[in-house]
Image (cartoon, rainbow, N blue to C red):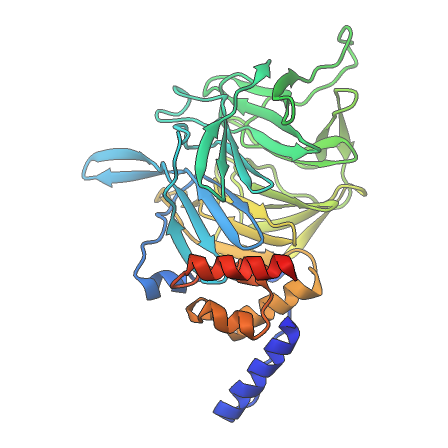
Length: 414
């Protein structure tokens, strides 16, 4: 029905304008800057430029939590932490500052965040000065109710740190690395999200001279495949680690090994971004202590091969954040964009890493041909045949909760 609606919309547009039809071509691996035109139309502020924040991506929205920026007031340099949660709605092209309830985390820089169902899980992080007030608490924000809760856990959690890497696999949350601000770690911890118990993952028995583990580090990135955690880069205040040999942690044997990758690889870096889709991990940007990067690389987790992609970021950045939706849409937000000027950006970039379902492509086409779809009344779209699953993706200019509820009931009964 959605394809029929698009075709009818195009026919009507053609009759009204008498202009040649505009075509739409879905493309992967094309990086675009998302312009928040909805904020301009609605007169709503944008999130301030920032670094050290984290984002997660659903099929309809990008959520940005926390972050940091230095603000100079004459001779005084103030350090600003952003105790706030923003949402960018893809259909309406609008950033919105969300009002939440419950206790929001206080450690707002270089924390971790991951999407679990419709919950954003936040772990670790630091306040100002960096390292003096770090955290090892797990916070959850329900993105439906916008309520924060602090997870009560048992067992042995990681020590209070920031700059860790985190992922969720089969109802277990893995934390790797981090720093107190003085010492660095490469420890691996696991939180069972069902039992709420922490465990330090260590090899059983006596440590042998042949046992190897990577150097401690922070602002590393990780991916998981075949029950193995792959560690990409990271570093300390003085050095950055390379990508030619990738450390791998086996979550079944709790042992470290390293793999030699094939072909060219990214230069050593920390503070880069990384997202995984299927058996590929993508990294972008980063910093090696003197240079900032704008390149984008793909790593195949089965063949251990690096591929440098033909695209580059619009500017070199580090301390940015990236996320990918289940459908394969990749997002990059914020980061430091100048070492010399010490400035941040609030740019939001996006590209598709794989071809999604035909329904998703149809939805992308409809948003392309109707760039102001959020200004159309919900009943008109619903009656025209736009499925409820796509109506739910839109933050309409004027939302009628009763109308949405009626649509939901009709949808559930059909």
